Length: 428
Image (cartoon, rainbow, N blue to C red):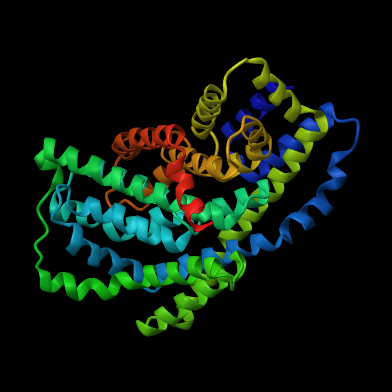
């Protein structure tokens, strides 16, 4: 049964079927083969109950928030400001790539949106300053992954819905690992450019006057982060209401910069509808697939298989991590998370691990999947916005050192759970 499910899923992905369609078709096939009941009749009720979950309303709000910041030029001004503060480091604007990604992640909630937004602003600078193009591309793809770890995160919202976990605690748990990961990315860039001085390109010329004048352009992401996350922990807004407040704050900032136009709003609304429709369709298909897994006993079979391995708790976590890393090479991250979390999380909790901690580990594993070929979404995003349209291999090779940093970060959080759990414990 398990072999049939995996073989069918891989075949559907190889046939380039859209992710939602692949999971839906797999659910229908497995239901027909192994279920004594016509599970397809549950689709209507399942689609309605899934899409009307109150917490999921936050998803289009965060998508709209990112769209407004992208289309009103806030992100480009933020990138320029950070170049004055970080451009002196070995690696120059590559540090701005990571820093801007971290700041944009604190408002967007999407890794793909983060990579696309920062990449669009940054890529023209490769030739101007003579950077090593592969490492520069890798910094954009890897920096974009911070979008699902630093709150607010769309993937964390879905994890909270799937596991009935506290979203505010998840958000707190992601802050320190996200900042630490950004710091490790920058340390790796600096080390590589010290060893190979020609990779770092020409130094950015600036002065303290320019730095101080750029500070106002760093305030929008900080203000929005304070509104969204601060309203949750102040106790006067739920995560969904906080997302709506974030949209209002983004509109106010756009108006303050004189960029709030009808054409901009229409483009932002259209982008939001497209992205939200894709996410919700994937969620519905994955919920149906999970229902089929439970009905035919596949979920129990996987739990029994893992228990028969006779591994200790940490050995089991390493096996699960390896499973996600391999699966992430062939499956899109959102659908992979929705399809596996309801099965894997009960196993992790039964081993005595904190679900909040596992949520952070899972986000790191999903980040790794975003930059591992052949299905790493951020690789395709960065490649698609390259002005030179060089070979895809450039993006893949440039991202490999950052994959090593991600794996090291996963090891750190597994070895030292307090990296993720300290801040929630302090706030509690």
